[in-house]
Image (cartoon, rainbow, N blue to C red; front, side):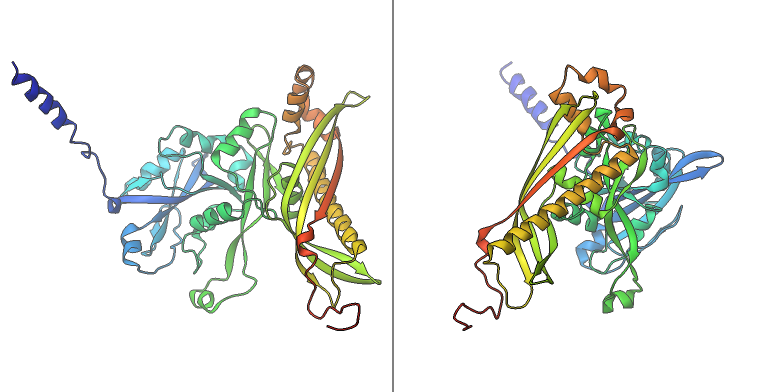
Length: 415
């Protein structure tokens, strides 16, 4: 008996050693880095055209070059480190199943970085496209979402000599420049949270294929005349239907209010002795607060207070420093006015679209939870009529003020 028990334990432990029975070698995987969704009409039914950008580990490991192939529906192209494949189906799963007939690798979505949705596809609602991934163990909450003006497949098929994968290029932009200017990175968790409130309108960055302003020798040789750019934000209604877009100025105003602005840069005109000069500032800190009250007419009143601190990046003028207090005060007033104009533009567009992108409804619910049930069912009727008061204050840090521009003269007239 003493020998049987150790032998039995050894047998059980031996069984635990077979932990790699279902392993897959990396070269056997089709590693998906980007997914594009477009609407497709299939025999009178509305379906989906699915485009995948797939990494080729074997080519990447050898350091071979190549460019992204632009595959059409039902086709694959490209022998470089990344390639694209497109297929249609009445569901996303059906489109993936069709791809499996032609792709000699297991399509693995666990490394996907970006989901891009075509404008036409999400006009009718984005939730059907998200359902598949909320059920998939390969999906992650930190995948970035974007909306394409036009077909989403064009975004993944766009070639670039710098980033041979558009999906990875967008991923880098969202990670590195979130909150800068009009860029707002939105991942699956962010989008689903706003959608789950039933009040706050979900948002997603807008990506477009635009002409290149200038071309490098490599781009001319490769025949690349267009590039992908982020041009604003897409606003959805609480049910997940795309309503319209916020442009760059409106998007920047929104970011101030929801405390997502990071390293924001602005160029301020200011007048010295009747002459217009320019100065560039960079935000180092900003904080917005929303105070809520109920007006005499029974409608909520929202007061936005935004305070921002800036550094001086550049003073584009001739022989004039920033030691004059009146100049600094003028610059701060101009910066504050620009912030107000941007926020006003965002509020106006939001109310025109009847999309509560600021989360005013959620803020009202938090501060007036007892009164909220009276407003909840009528919020979409109330929202366009809300009174919004905006106050902004900008401050330029003293750290940069002692730096005089080249050629500045001292009081004695020397240099």
